[in-house]
Amino acid sequence: MADEKPQTVPEAQTPAENKPESETAPETAKVDDQPGTVAESEAAAVVPSAEPSGSKEEGATQPSAPTPAADSTEAKEEPAKEETKEVTQDEAKEPEDKKDETKVEPASATTAEATTDAAKEDGEPPASPIQQLWAAAQEHKHGEIWGVDLADPETHIPSQIVFQKYLNANDGVVAKAKDQLVKTLDWRAEAKPLELVGKAFSKTKFDGLGYVTTYSASEGGTDPEKREVFTWNIYGAAVKRVAETFGDLNEFIEWRVALMELALQSLNIKDATTPITADKDPYKIYQVHDYQSISFLRQAPEVKAASTKTISVFAQNYPELLREKFFVNVPAIMGFMYAFFKLFVAAKTAKKFHPLSSGASLARELAESPVDGLGEKLPLAYGGKGGELASQGRGPELA
Image (cartoon, rainbow, N blue to C red):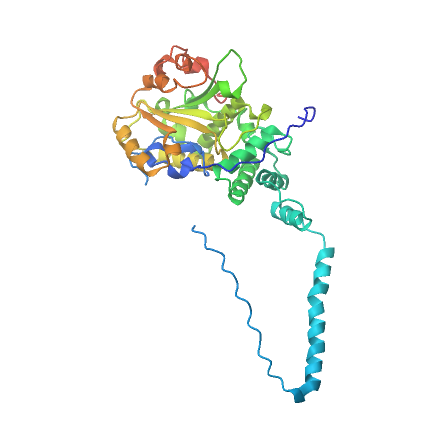
């Protein structure tokens, strides 16, 4: 990015409404991708259970004026009064001396808060929310998120997009956004998700379980507003090998993270040239969860553990990346449970979740996409005229 002409990025905007899917989604439609909270949680529900889940600011009190002490010293005690007066004058000088000493001390700039305080003392305007996140990121040993090497968001659009997503996921509250950002950096430093993309997973355990597909308005198109990225989780493919696929929890999470990182590569945030705002963000992913042949009456403990862990990991580390989520080939009762669920969440959140009893209905749900004819590009099993997922998409390496 060093060779590119610096681009000025507009100051971060506070989203009008951003309820974390991870906190609001019921057990019937667990999300494996959002925070934040806040999340966009972009967590993947492995198999939804049949059970739906279910500050005030105090005004600043003006301090009352101190009541002056009554002067009860008699005139005959004049000598004592003079001594008291001298002491009082000396004491009065002391705060001023201390004030001067304080000015001499350099302001600390080791944290985002200290930087902001120092700017205030120097008469400079406080750092913007995004700059405060950048300051926090600079202090961390790990400097990458979603394939983006973090840099000054004033001139580096991909970094602006990353930081803005963390602000959006936390309703613009800097402290919460910074906390989530730092935790993501901690996790990425330990989990090394970029390395997982190149890791070979067991074909016996994960073959046919997940894919990433990309559809553009034109062949090879790169405009993020005219391109749709999908992740497909075909849980029915594992119905005969539940213990194998989900038994090793850490291995399953690594595979699921690798699938998400492949989708992020398709989003191509690292080459973005246009900043996002609280209201406009084309860098999001469709998720399709296919439950063909899955029983909703019984849930293996391995599956439940995998679902819970996936939701936790994705809610924390992949905020504001979910566009919409479709649960296909689910029993009709799921539709009734979803209608009940919508009564308790924000409309913005409810609009992202769609249970479909037939996979063939999916194409019709995408009629308003900016990618013309998107529905027809989907595989036949999902109402389109395209090839099978195995030929259209890609997944983590298998061996």
